[in-house]
Length: 344
View 1 (cartoon, rainbow, N blue to C red):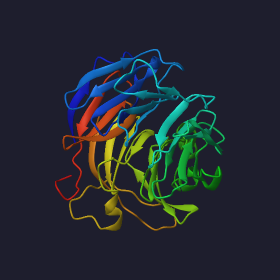
View 2: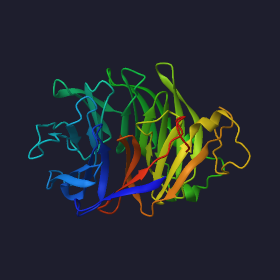
View 3: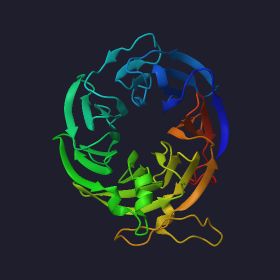
């Protein structure tokens, strides 16, 4: 993992979120209602919008089917070719939105917020489809399950992970991540760094949760209505702010970032195989009933600042990881993923 570019001159305050389109445009949202679009191929500022309502732009996402369509929290829908004004605005959330995301078919858009609710929006009909209520506190992250037509996973500051059937607004399973804490975790450590769920990401049947107590809990979807805990990744020294499955790779790599400024690429495939002699000593042991699993740290880098958001993209054949931190600058790294065509 090597640094590629720095995107500067667009934001005045911290960058809070990122998204990369399939045609090589990077969107960054920040404090004070700042929204910027950048060219990735030749790092430069394309558009700048300031003073959006609701103070902060906390999440952005692009359409894959229509790469010029951009959703920005609160929730504004833009055409990236003309950022003068939004083409539509959804006004269904009552409190600050923490994440917006499309489902695979892009007929639904989800927006989770500080009230703990998740609004499921009929994107084609431009109307509210369902309101999911299950979190007792802030819902920090919500992702659709690509392998389940009506599936969604969410996590919140109530320490709960919920699997939903969003067509019925029904909770299929709830797990408190504190149930998977290590046996030697002290009460004082829990009080200082409780396992609040800050980030959730899904890839195939696997999903990951980044927690405030510096660990990542791994789960696998099972059947139509359940999931099971498969392992605990330990590599960060402070809270895990982001977990991200890169868009362009196989399902056995996970990227995490934390308040410690560290970025880790995890080799999940090593859960099913023994480490060769001389491999990384950083590993994970499962605390659940599934047995002992191990995951190798494939790559690690000290970014140097508390990280707010990660996203990825493939531009002109180059696999990139984009990082937003507490500064006004966005950084890109080349991410060497072992997909059978090169080295990790």
